[in-house]
Image (cartoon, rainbow, N blue to C red):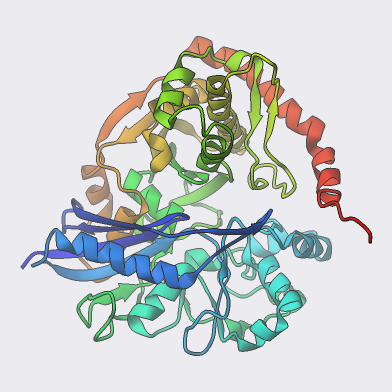
Amino acid sequence: MQELLLGVDVGTTATKAVLVDQLGVIVSHGRAEYETTHLQANWVEQDPQQWWKTFCKAVKEAKSFVPDAKISAIAISAQAPTLVAVDADGIPVRNALIWMDRRSQVESDQLANQFPNISELTGNRADPYYVAAKIKWFIDNEPENYLKTKYFLQIPGYLNFKLTGKFGIDSAHASLLQLRSADNKIWAKEVMEFVGVGEDKFPQIANSITLQGEVLANNESEIKAGTPVFFGSVDGCSAALEAGVIDPGVVAEMTGTSTVLLMPTDGSNFNDAFVAIEHAIPNRGLRLGAMVASGASLAWLTQNILKNTASIEQLSEEAAEVRAGSDGLIFLPYMMGERSPIWHTNARGVFFGLSLTTTPAQMFRATLEGTAFALAHNVEIARKSGIKIDEIRSIGGGSKSGLWNQIKADVLGVPIALLKDSSGAAVGDAYLAGLGVGKFSDIRSTIKNNIKIETKYQPDLKLHSYYQQRYSIYRSVYESLKQDFDKSAITAAYKVNK
């Protein structure tokens, strides 16, 4: 009987499952999608029960291709961070507030004002992205639900509970709570006290390859009882493992609804949100740069503005014929506010340079260029901090666009590489499961042996020089609008006095 490792990643739009053999080779895939609820601007929720249903569906699909195989270990990763409040029975007391939810900006500002040194205390700046501000909003606005809450979990912890009946949080997700010390070893008690939450609201914290429990009998997932389940990790860290991004110089771009940069360091004197890779590849840390609206910008554009003009494929073909620079059009891709490097909740998407001759193809190309400029902004900050970037390996749904990849290469001035048969974070999860159960004696060799570059988009250095000029204007447009974004947010909802 073939023994396989199960890796599952819960993304922003879908759950992906892969089965991997003991050489690290992918054997089968499964996938299931779910909905995201946008209650209003910056309020974004998901139903945790849908994560479980799609987990079961994706796993069953992956298993269907190898029905006689035995799953020897499981690890799960997920979008992060998320506010998942559950009662003593592990039942969610409300829908989850996902990473994209920024309703807790006021609470985030309160944290920043109370703790000007919060980055030193917790390793992260105050922002609604992190869980501390979300919990404070939850306590202040839904006290009845807070009273019902036994634990605050993260997505892997919720699914692991469904599988094993045991509560836990992996250490990578724990560092995104903004309630831990900068080295992620102890609780930041002064921050917890200000938020109004105690240590008792969080279960055991352990690293990604620690055993959390074993699968229960008669489980809906139909995974055999007794199968070991490990704590798992954040999607970005697992994706970096799959992409072979384990040494300085090679960077991963995880691109889908949002885009995340994963940049290896030497791991010395460094703590950041993603620590699980340290357990797989000793002395290697990761830095994070992220933009909220990459694929989301394209989805909005095609679904709401250009929906009656052409298909995405046709628009891509037409956009390829548009000159670099989109004939003067610049797009700011801040459709849901922005995280790194501007950290601005009230920032919004902007088309700058529209005219009566602007075409849908120009708008489409400008969107691709705008998201590439946002990526360049993160790269600029990273390089100033001493991070080496020689090649970017693009993984995720956004990597399927050849035009977008070439634009990114030209804007950034570095090659954009695509992996053959890339399946993203779920593969990295399978690697973690293999490490946990002792199937991989040399994980570095396993990863490198399975990395195959299929395509590499080389930058056009003349276009790169030109794009540097456009990038400068892109930066200037945001700086000019920065204060107006905040003023507009205050007056955005007009109410008639009766």
